[in-house]
Amino acid sequence: MKNAKLIAILFLLMAPFLYSCEEGTDVVESGTYQGTIDKVNPEETEIYVNTADDKRLELYFTETTTLERNGETVPFEQLQQGQQVEVEVEKVGQRLEPIAVRILE
Amino acid sequence: MYDPTFWRTEIWHPLTVHFPISFLLLATLVMLIALFLKGTQAHFWHRAGAYLLYAGCLAAWVGIYTGGLADGIVSRKICDPTVLKDHEIAADNMAYIFSAATLLVLALRLNLLRVKTRLLQVVAVLLMVVGSGFLVYAGHLGASVVYQQAGGVNVPAGDCAGF
Image (cartoon, chains in turn yellow, brown):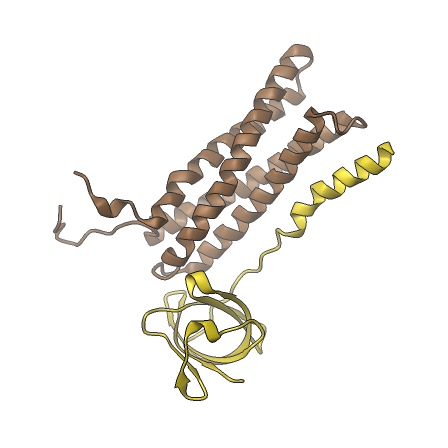
């Protein structure tokens, strides 16, 4: 019984470490890239896109960022995890500004 | 001069992060000293360290929350958001490690763990030392965001118009 309690508490102590593995992000040159949306953060109008060459792009939408699906402008809420997208980005310093995002499916 | 634009969302982060920085570093030092003491002195220092740790851990999560609020604003204007991302990752690791240390210290103080208590005390202090390393690194990166990239800082016009 004592051992069971000890093991339960040690598992509880280890649990925080399971959540502490956040991924970093990458910087790429200005251009157009295709990839999959890994995460959408609606509160900050922010998306993470994993490109085919294994880069992870963190993109904060600006007032001028356009979002299209089948050639039509759509709201940010249309973006979902797992979607294939094409993003046109401009590198400003080490910051990536999304110029245009197109949903491919 | 009262300037209403000072109270911006991103300002809450620098206003809150200095509490965990001071509490947690001091808690680590106090707990480390307690390890080398005996009797009532050890008891006093351990209790003082534990209270600092509880307060610091709580303040750390407040800092993580306010950091999340600042992130979306600051990331859009600084020149190298990768530094901010590294700052966020280091801060998250720090908060989780100090949380584990807090749970361990709390379990020891509540007598939930009665075997190998001395060893577990040492483990808690080791976690705090590692957490302090992440804390210092996160602080260094945070300072870099503020002082090198003016993250969250209002940059006045060159001719100081408005002052």
